Length: 460
Image (cartoon, rainbow, N blue to C red; front, side):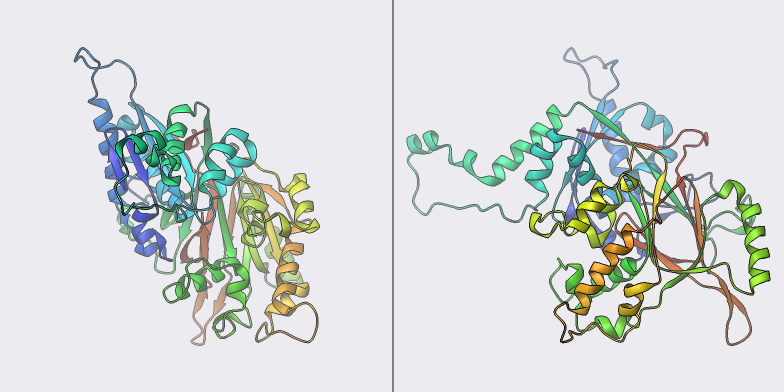
């Protein structure tokens, strides 16, 4: 992390606890973040850094030594993948609530620079803005590891060095120039909507009951900005993170599915059995109808899902199975092209709603994941390839719905002792897994006035 009076670079070198899987290891700070009643996840260090930069910007004076009357601009550069964006949105949302006066006194500009790994928001910007695609995404999205440098063994004569301008020819210098050009030349502000995940846990809130206004309030709130996922892809991310300690960091979906430890860890796969409400305004009526129907049919209102994806960018940008194929022209098959051309998959982070993409527990996907392993057979297509193809086909089915507020909860069961318990599940927000939770509600995040949606300004 580097800083100046009005410039912050949050990059992969400073991810710290944000690369771990469970949100309980991310800093939780109790305070005024959400009306003193519900804790909100954020790193106090990151919020302090933003506050420091804003306060320093307010101290900047004009050339004559007088205090400027203009609202100072604070430039924040995010360099990395989805986890970096998630880390920042936690701090940014908390900063807005903890110190609204300081936030209102400055103008914050966020500059998004992708690095190796998935950055859904940067990919959407590149698809929507050709200037950003050419000057930022194409240059940085492949990672910054392949920037060779050299140190000449023999000194170069001054005249030759000046003529060749060796330093200016190095790739790393060109990238630095592009980064400076981006922060200087970008003049379009894209207001991206921020969402929140209200969460309920088995253990309840860390806030004492006497301080909570309502017993039904969530135990915690976690902001997110591009996607929320539940199911197989979340479990695969947990598995991937565990084996990263011993193996290569960058693992594809196929690497995970064919890993020696995958069958013993996740197979046969247990699908997520969940109760999903997509129209909370009529929830009471919906719940009544579901209970009535369940009583008549003698079954639970819950359904089994392979995965659920809620995203405010196109589904093919957020879905891990599909996004791996987008960077390779050779692997973008007709199935992926049909997904990209389907208007139902289109969505914009400028809107305060989410697209819901479901993979129900059925068909070839169920058949493959319900087995003991994905070992190769005598057929031309391996079980792993067949599963990946089936997951892509499942995403294309007509299960896409636009939602503004959605509730997901686990069904209640009786354990061996006859005690009623509620099943829990993990949620992956912007590529970071949180949980387990018994219930979550996804919706736009509002400021204290409960009318204004929180937005993050990204420059292009």
